[in-house]
Image (cartoon, rainbow, N blue to C red; front, top):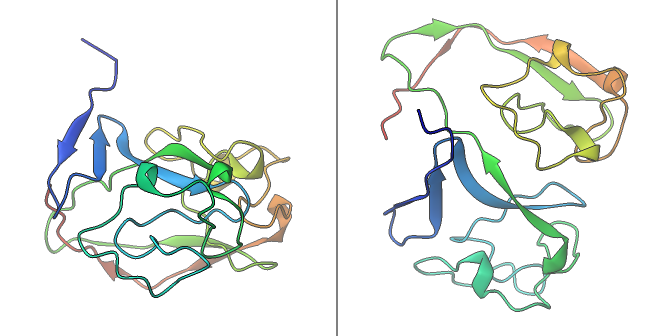
Amino acid sequence: ANNQAMMVDIEVTSSMITKTSTGVLEEKCDVCGHVYDPFKDCGGMANPDANCEEGVPFESLSEDWECPICGVKKAHYHAFHSHLPTPAISGTHRHVKNHTCNVCGHTYNPHRDCGGMDDLGSDCGDGVPFEALPKDWRCPLCGADKQHYLAAHSAPAHEPQVSF
């Protein structure tokens, strides 16, 4: 079996989203964790209401473009693989255990945040449960220690059907 990721373009309304065998390749701010959205973030901090029309690829932004959340330059963004959701069977229910930082409000995502502040682009594979994170793991947004996360169980949630 070939274990190398194969790049495939997905047509949305343009070909700005790249799907790999491990997920979607996106751009993420090293400072605040913002993930660039080509359909709404093209104006950055200077022009948050800019009309992005059909979307603006991250690579097409000028070098002086600034993060719409924290204002750092484009150079502070890096590519990472966000993992695709596991397709759900219509009508299933599950209990969701969320862990939320009591400093900044960030909710841990086991498919994106396993590297924490120290390794923002870490490949989380099929997802890393919060409980399995190392003791020195830190919030990817504010850098708070793992102990600042509070666990909360949600009520059974209807899992929406996902199609690829």
